[in-house]
Each structure stands twice: as C-alpha cells, then as structure tokens.
Image (cartoon, rainbow, N blue to C red; front, side):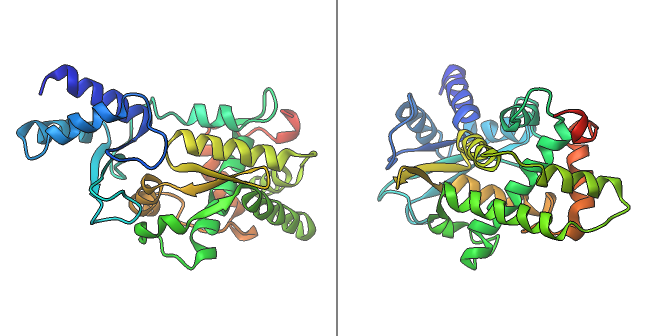
Length: 269
C-alpha cells in the first residue's frame, strides 16, 4: 500500500464521508477504487497507522458489513469517516459554509442564521426519532427515517406558528430576539430554509436523496448520519424539540457558534 493510495482514500473520505463496496445508489466517481484500497488495508499495520492519522484530525474510520447493519447489500461493506465527539474536527468542516448556505438574504446576521439552523436541526431530530418512537442509540433504524421535504417544512412552520400565537413575554433580550427571528417570516422563507438545510445535510453525507413523490424530494437519514447522532448527541445540544423555555439557551448556543454576532435581526435584514 503506497502513501499515494492512502492519500486518495483520505481525500475521498474527506469529501464524501462514506464509501460502499456495493452501493444501491449511483456510485460516486472513484468510489470503487477507494473501496478496493480500503479492502486491501484489512488487518494490516498500515490500517492502524491510517486510523491514528484520522484520530489526530478528529475522525475515526468506522466499518460495517452486511451482517452487521441493515441496508447494506449482501456481501457488501461500508466505511464511514465519523467525527469523534472528544476532538475538534479541522476547520475545513467549517460552520461558516453552513451559515453561508442557510442565509436567505445578504448581510443576514450569523446569529439569526444559526438560530434557524439549530431549530430546523432539532425539529429534524423529532421527525426522524421522536415521531418514529426511535431512540438516539438505534443506529440500525436509519432505514425508517424517511420523509418528504414538506414534512419537515410543515413541522418547522407549526413550531413558528406556535411561537407567534403564544409570543411569551420575556425580559431576556436573547429570548426576545430568537422569537423575533423565528416569527419574522416572509412568503416561502421556511420552505427555502428547509431546502437549504436538506441540501447541506445531503452534501455532508448525513442525509440521502432517495426518491421523489408528488414532485418533491424524499430524504432518508444516512447510516453515517445515524452513527454521528448516536456518537455526538450528548456533546451537542441534547434536546429533541425546542420549546419556549429553551430559547435563551438556544440563543447562547447560536451566539457561541456564530463568532459572537448577535446583532438584533432588524438591524441586519
């Protein structure tokens, strides 16, 4: 095994996060070669060294065979580049790209974009876990986590409507700002936000675009997405569905993940 081949495998995993020896979907360019390289690493000292390299970058190479996980083709294998919850991943997995993709308007405050992303992500978790009666640790249930985009859009819309109708009074300026962000909606804003969220999640390998129904995209949580939630959930927010009493903590989290940009939304829209 040459360093050039390891470099190929490393570059592919950083881009696609997942390699399948017998994918049911359309193959990514070069995927069959990377599967061959990873197969050749079996039970070698080089595999241990490759793992050490990845661990130093905040990742771990996780492998499943068809007998270990549903949804893998007979005789197939899947390798995934999973983030480690105890190590900060490198900057090329930057939140800045996510915020850029999620923003709807020029000069939108990062804090506002972060609040939207966090709420959609939490409601997404309720769609693929709570609504299915599924536990966070049930990685093998990822095949059931299937939904058309409109389901997630409707869930986000209902949450925003509840906030608008309740409009709880709060002396906390952060909570007030969050409510303002989530209730100042124009036209198809929610559909556009959800579409961007699903696109980002798909490109990150955490969702899969598997079908179309009634002219809309149907998504399913990927095996990588289920694995990462299981491994990293406790180091994240730790909430399935945001409520009014959690707005302040969500704002604090958004502020932390947007480089301190918490300017009121009305100054940046």
